Every structure is written in C-alpha cells, then in structure tokens.
Length: 321
Image (cartoon, rainbow, N blue to C red):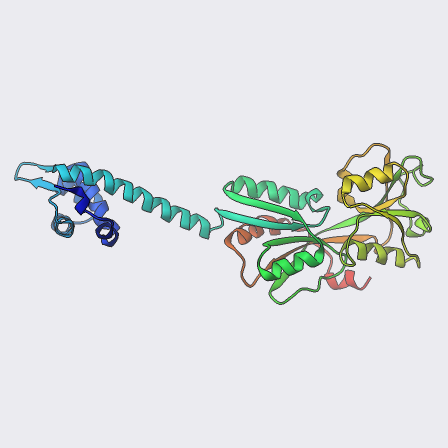
C-alpha cells in the first residue's frame, strides 16, 4: 500500500479524537481495555475506528475473535498519528500560555531612575522567575515618547517620573507606584558636604546645576517646581545624556545635581548626598499602560507589580502642593 495516499488534506479533516482513539487501541491492542481507558463503551469506539479506516481507505487493524493487531499500514500510521497529536498538544499549550501571558514579549519605556526603584526592580525579577519565556525589551524614553507609544500600542508599559498627576490620552491609565524624596548630590569638597543633615531648597541658591536633559515634563518639572517653591530657578550649567556621566561631572566638581532617592544606590567616588526638606521635594514614579487593549503579558506583569505599590497620599493632594 502506498502511504502517500494518506495525504495531508485527509489528515487535516480528521478529528483529533479519532487519532486519540486509534493510538489508544493501537497501544492496548484490545478494544475493551482501550474503551475503558477512554471512558466510552466498546461499540462506539469500534465504530469510530471503522470510520477512520473508511476515511483513509486503509485497513489499520487485523481483527479476529482472539486478537487485534496492527496492519503494516497501521504501524506506519501510528507513528504519524502520535507525531500529529504531539504537535497538536504543543500548539494548544503554546496558545494557552500565550493567552495567559506566559509567552510573548513585554516592552517597557523607562525613566532614567526606574531600574533603581526597588518596587520595579523586584517586580521585574519576580516576573522573570514566574514567566521565563517572555522576552523583555526595555528602553529609556522621555515622558512624551512613552505616552505616545503606549497610546499607539507600540509600548506595553511606561515607567515615568512626575510629581504631578499625568495628563494622558484616552485609554491610557496611570498608577502611582512609589514616592521618592529628592536629594542633592555634590562632591565631598562642597561647602554643603560637611554634614548629612536635611537641607532647605534655599541653601541651593545660585549653585551651578549639572542635569540630565529631561524634557519639560517629568523630573525636570519636579526640579523647577521644587526650586520655585523657594522663589528660585535652577542654574543649569551642564547637561549629560548618561547618568554615569552626570554623576562623574558632579564628582569632578562641575556642579551639584538633584536626584530621586533611589539613585543614591549608584556609588560614585567622592560623592556626598543630602536630603532636601519640604513637600515640594517629592517625586512620584508612575506606571502607565493602555487599559483599552492590553496584551496578556501586560496583564501578567500588572498582577505582579500592582499589589506591591505603596499606599500613597491622594494624588490631588500632592498636585496642590
């Protein structure tokens, strides 16, 4: 018999349950035992196997009153049936895992300090352990770029820093994750580096400021609001596009910089940090995502990180500061 006659089209129209029935009978070589394991009675099982043979135009079993055995064609078909069922089971598993967020990718847009926030770093570690087959793609982006990409569906999750409530497009949701106190970083030789006591914003008047080139939203807005609370404007003398460069410039004595508390985890030689007093010296980290059409991987990550969000003061209260 030419097995080429059992073509792909015929296999495609067979029900998977016919193949499962066949494999079980072929394994047991006994219709009664196979039927019991499948949870059906013997006559319907025999009928289903005959329907399969009719559809294929091939006899799969030799039957007698004493025994059942596979034909030559049946032995070949058993290998193919098992392989087909394995592929089908794999396809079902992959589909279900993708639907539950266990497979796929997850794209993040980050502010410069996001990875140094314990809540995000810990959630990322927990997510990686729970969903090791999800590919993570992280890129540092401005607030505006994150907002636009999340709204367009090209970015799953944004981590942005802003003391104020974010203005977002329809469908995009923001959740406040944590609040950071602001610190001033300065070289050890600076006049303010003689103590670790909390300082006032007014103590920073006329200080040269080295800063990261944020856009007008986010942390730079927090910076201007903080200085403005004391009737001051930051005197920015130098910008650095890399956080390591910025702290290196401060360490070299080119100026001070203002950072969220989480970035004190970056240890640079000759740097001294002092906390800044006042309710205006606060910055919030927000998670934004497209609530209108989130991917399964997005929902899976939200399930990991949102239960860990801090119990924050009311957003409107902070916005009024």
